[in-house]
Image (cartoon, rainbow, N blue to C red; front, top):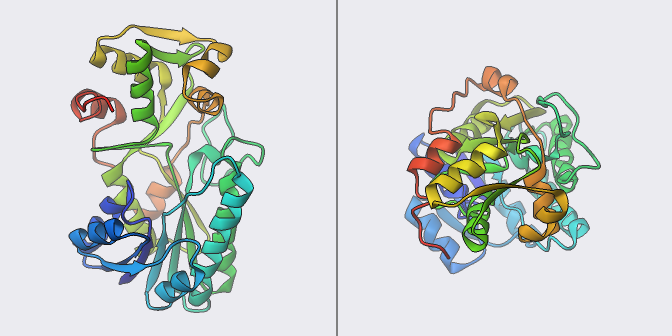
Length: 303
């Protein structure tokens, strides 16, 4: 299969591109810079100049492919409406050339769209008032193509996609611990975060492209919920720092922003049972806490 990929030079993207090529697929990746193009070429992919705002480039990339994987997401987080519009418009441009072809379109979202406080499944509805509701418009734009002859599916990734050279939520938590001298959690720390290793996520993306039926909602989650207190304690031990509980008010100033305090206090366990059964996906790589203890998270120099 010839796959057109957006976000192939980002954090999770290179692992996905490598997985696709290892499985015998060819990859063309959207590249908005020379650096991105060089990274894609190093992985064995062909760069395709353009950006998420260059709709003609997105359409031409999709037209020439047997399938499309959309992982790129970005913009100004102070203007969520614009981010939603940008993502939805990009998905519509990518999906249009695939109509009535049966070709796959796989779009990325996140499990933070799901309701808090209970283990959500792939069949549950997202929380339209939740902290990540801005991702739902993209999900719906993708799944709308299922009725137009596209094998459209959505992969919701865990908020923590961990692995070497991570620069997501967990490194931000570690940086805050180093800066403040304490590895903290909010409240009693029993709130749970789903997690998945980057290499396991890459396999899931490949399986979605190869097998997922039209209209599939998939959860990229290897661990349904890791308690934040356990994460904080593992970081504290690794850095030789004390661990402490914060009130919601204290958290709002302890972390880099009040929004991040809300994110770190979020209780969002998620099941991936349906995804595993549907696609035969079986995560095999280290857990988040194993990665924190034995990976590069706590050995990397402070930035």
